[in-house]
Every structure is written in C-alpha cells, then in structure tokens.
Image: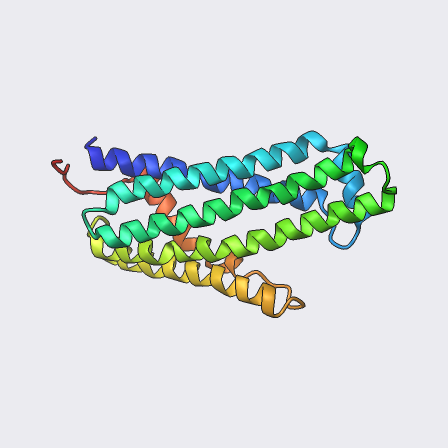
Length: 229
C-alpha cells in the first residue's frame, strides 16, 4: 500500500469516526431533550447523567477527528491545489472552534441541574428554565457551526473534481454531491434563523456525497503514485 493510499484509508477511518460520534451525540440529545418541556428534559438528564456526559464527550471526539480528517485530506489534496486545500482546513478549524466553545452551553445545563451551592437561591423551576436556555443556546450554536460544516465541502468538492484520484465519472458525481451537501448545511442555517417555524432539515436529504466519499476512502483509497518530498 503506497503512502497516498494509506493516507486515504486513514482519512476514511477518521471520517467514519466523525460520523459515528456525531450520530451518537445527536441520538443522546434526541433521547434526553424534550423541546418546550424544561421539567421533563431536566428529569431525563438527571436520570441519565452518564449518558448525557457520554454524548458530550462524543461531540468533542467528533470535533477532534474532524480536525485530523481535514489534515489528512490536506496532505492528500495539497498537490492538486494548495490554496483550496488550505481553505478547506481553515473552514474546518473555524467550525471546530465554534463547536468546542458551544459545548460549554450544553455542559452548563448539567452544572445548573446539579445544583451547586451558589445556585441554591434559585427555585427548581428557575433552574430547569436556565438549563433549558443553555440547551437552546447550544442548539443555536450547532446551527451556526453548520455554516462551516457546509463551507469546507465546497473546496473539497473542487479538489475531488480536479484531482483525478477517482474514476472519472465517480469523481464528477462525487464532487457534485459534496457541493450539494455543502449547500444543504447552508440552507438549513438560513431556514433555522430566518424561518424558525419551518421545521425541516435539508441535510437529511443531501448527505450522500459525504457517505460516498467516506466509503470510497475507507474501502478503495485513491489511485495515485507516491509523491517525493
């Protein structure tokens, strides 16, 4: 296995870890957080605190793997176009920073519900309401980070198209699907903040490009010769 194929496989493994960790974190939030009901949400979190913590850690692992994935893809695609590869990494770094800072909102909800000494002056309803506010802030932070979840796919799609690393037809289809996936994230961001009553997630229909790239990198790698440093 040449160096580039090995790098592609590593990128595939990292992409898989990103997907698994992200799915688990979303699953945990969907199980514990009941939109519009602070009391039930608080009860769920306190009854399954360890699960809540695992979901929190899973999100951070996902973000770490995303950064490592971007670096692996940078190494792979730098010979194609260094500027676009750097742009891709830059979007990932900004999105990762937003995600990590935003995780404080999620953990703050647990701190509030655990009732530290300095919070004893607040009633149960007030603590639950504050916890729900932090969870709502976390939800909004996720959507803001989605700007960069989408943006990094545009230079990646271009690099896939220009690289010649994939079979010609597959490369074209994959690049188009990646750009569509990027647009999906951007549309979700606009819908969430401009039309909050319109409850739909475009990304549930536009993620296929990322899945296809993940599988191809993981199973097939890329067919390019080793590059001399």
